[in-house]
Image (cartoon, rainbow, N blue to C red):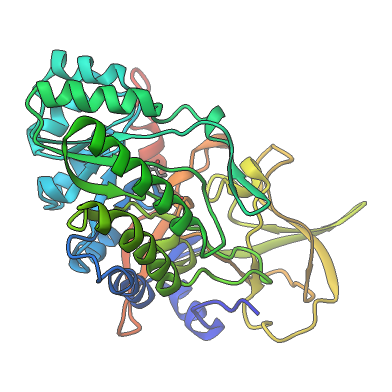
Length: 415
Ligand SMILES: *Cc1c(COP(=O)(O)O)cnc(C)c1O
């Protein structure tokens, strides 16, 4: 059973101060997750997690991760700017961008971020628009399909990211001539994997590639970046990934492939977003209306602007009716927002206990790719974000937008 990290009693207390809807984050669990990850990879001396900022671009959250020895992974100038302002040092910022504008490479160089080149063509571009750093990484795309056992996990062939093996080898040779001293290899082959086998399989593939690339180019390999892709158990019957098992699987691949080939000092990096944060955020929303036509509808005060994943990908997000955790699921509802779009549904035909107007619903696993994918369609404003702190108190870490925010960029009208 998937239970919220907050009780009905606590929620009733929080909403005295902050109106729904809002995103709520669990500080204690976020810290524990970061520690578990660092512990699982503690066998690798240079291990570092660079949290994918796009998942939860909220300064208070990034600061917590910084305190837990994580860096950040950025893909745009504003993510870089925010990370820099938050005091992340150059070496703690990975810039894994693609289709990158010149000024973003320039800014990444200015703040000393580690550049992860997405394209072979970006080698010449980087040299033209700024200077070539001493340490650089290249992103690999093996093409074909990526499968684990009989399951096809994802389709690198169709992915716009990364370079072919031949391009990666040529990029390393070119970059060496341009003065690069230390190299990294990065790859992201499958998203939201709910299996302990993804990272070990990816690691094996990248470690074998690394041995081949080093033999062919003679470069000094500094790090291998396993990137994101460890998923979460959105469905109640899914089993959560076990990071200790994953770390151990990667260690075995490391010791059987890298160490015997003289690469036993290579640092491992990760760029996890979803795994770090998704389970530790809830979207809290209140039931405004019930409606009965061909289906039974529950209308809430959040909408797809607060959480796009169900509308965009048909994603499942578990829903708990706060205070009715143990009641039987006797009713079937579509749980909907108020956008003028029929895909604005948090759940379709979902069994739930009987819902009443005024109930608080907890939408689970919204801590990553939740608030950050929000938008303002139908002139809906972005919600607040609230941190449930370790001592049980709450802190507003982002206020809800006001009408003035919506109108702020307009010229010639005074609202
Ligand atoms: C999105 C992204 C991540 C994080 O992915 P998750 O699925 O949230 O773990 C990491 N690295 C890169 C380059 C990304 O684009």
